[in-house]
Image 1 (cartoon, rainbow, N blue to C red):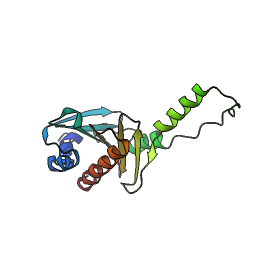
Image 2 (cartoon, helix red, strand yellow; image 1 turned 30 degrees about the vertical axis):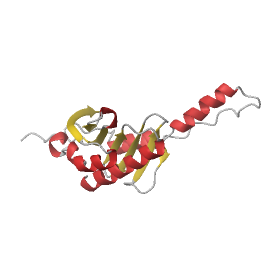
Image 3 (tube, rainbow, N blue to C red; image 1 turned 135 degrees about the horizontal axis):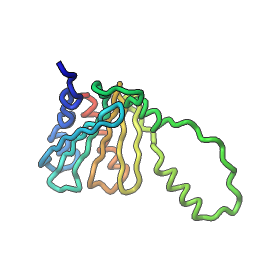
Length: 172
């Protein structure tokens, strides 16, 4: 008997209900669209929850081990590389009077760095900027990525993402 594919075991779109998304986004879900893509030794299961206003749609992805093609790069290993990279060797110290443009670039880079979020899964990080962002949550051998559309305020976008993550984690 052939091995069962991960997408046959996990109904990614069942991790969140239309009702949960409607409460968070104040929009009904018009359509759910699941997909799966292999990614090295794991598979990315994705669900796009299209709301009435397209910009308010929600995207949920689950990185899970691929039992058909296991490899050294598991979701946990990818997580470690993504959120716990080795420290770079110390660079030269900034020189007084450094060009303001360089400082602005560094500030922008700092804002893009993943920000730890407490109280979700084993670990969670928010990664984004003033326009877009995604919440990553590690649980067991897998991790979730949640992105909420149609919200301009970054802190509100994060709070909505956290609420949806809590709901999805209960079913994971």
